[in-house]
Image 1 (cartoon, one colour):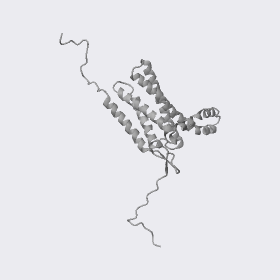
Image 2 (image 1 turned 30 degrees about the vertical axis):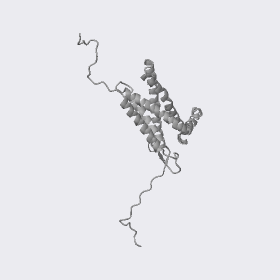
Image 3 (image 1 turned 135 degrees about the horizontal axis):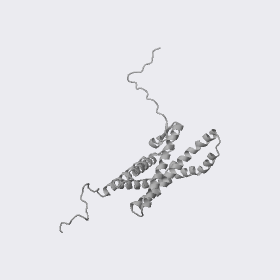
Image 4 (image 1 turned 60 degrees about the horizontal axis):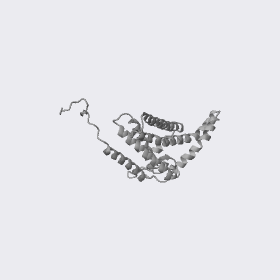
Length: 246
């Protein structure tokens, strides 16, 4: 029998790509990462007058993005609806009662598994809820509606949101270790391994581009509308400086 050989012109067969499903659309991912970027930037620029306008701009951006996310959760596709988040939160009291009744490690493991998605939903709900008092108190501080107590209120909500955000990230890391699967990857790529139909039927890429373009346009407008920084070493008026006319 003659041996079969590949001719030089025969292309090598490419390995089959693993099947994936889309679970998060591009617009939801864009809103998520822009919100994260805005909050981190606003938190890092909270102290000092030099970065105050950047802090305020990122705070306004965060408020606008969260408002857009809430509207997207009301009128967007099914998988991003706030009603899904609300239904998960409704199961939280029953899960807490079942957790209090745990007596054995086996029962704890069985109770912990459904609680993972509940804790994730709670973290997301708290993040969305904390943005409103955070930005409102920040606006009040910016317009000087009150004294130092308003700054304390604003700082409290900023630290509370940071704590919840870090707990959210910590939970993602914990679940990634327990499940041996990167739980943050779907928010980056929008897809997970597996066969079957996409959970997110449409990617909504144009809407994601509109969100990004609107954010960048707002930043550019704030940049051009900002007053110029004072020149270092410029002469400052002083009451003790003698008048040349005297």
